[in-house]
Image (cartoon, rainbow, N blue to C red; front, top):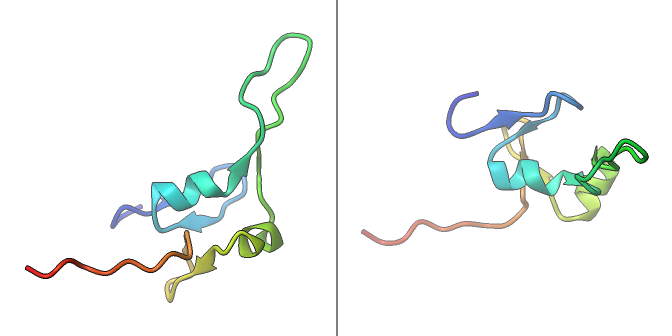
Length: 71
């Protein structure tokens, strides 16, 4: 996607940044032959509970406010 945004192939949600994408995933990466990994996408409700918000374009953000530094 453009402007630094991304889409999750697993759940189909769009994210404004890699940080927001990373926030929506939880669980263990390490899967072995005896145990599958527990990595998963958070639900919409879980993302909102973490403070994540959707922007005007429908992409999820971290929910943090950023200000541009004065030039």
